Image 1 (cartoon, rainbow, N blue to C red):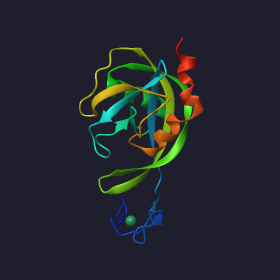
Image 2: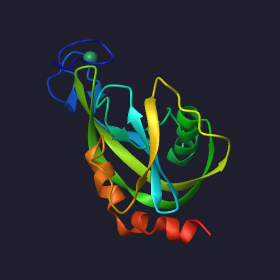
Image 3: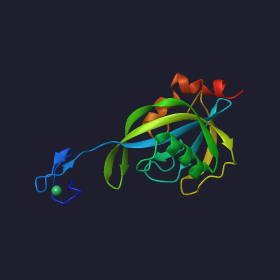
Image 4: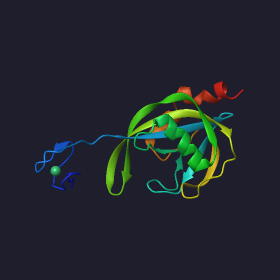
Length: 166
Ligand SMILES: [Zn+2]
């Protein structure tokens, strides 16, 4: 059941114009920013602590803040989740996915960058992940979110550590 964010009247499925106050409500995807941190043919994965998909391997990333550029969000999320500074390499694409949260299925616009760690020691935020691992780019496991599986099989990403690591 959808309700108008302005007056609370029932609107039905979005997009919809509120029958009570005329507010036009849309269902827009929310942007996320994710890093594929690469090193010597491996990528860094975090075992998720949080629902949805707790207990699955995940890439560091998260939702962009209101007016934050996704590239800035990618760097920020890596710092918050891992305690490291990353430098973004090539943009690895945008995908539309879904995220089940608080009883809603949200459309998400997932933005991916190849990245390398340039500073700091990895210190996992235990609220985000229970452990991390460097997993082989040549044989990634099934990840928490299906677009991550697609990105990790992209030749751009698979070959990335060859270009980025001297
Ligand atoms: Zn309304």
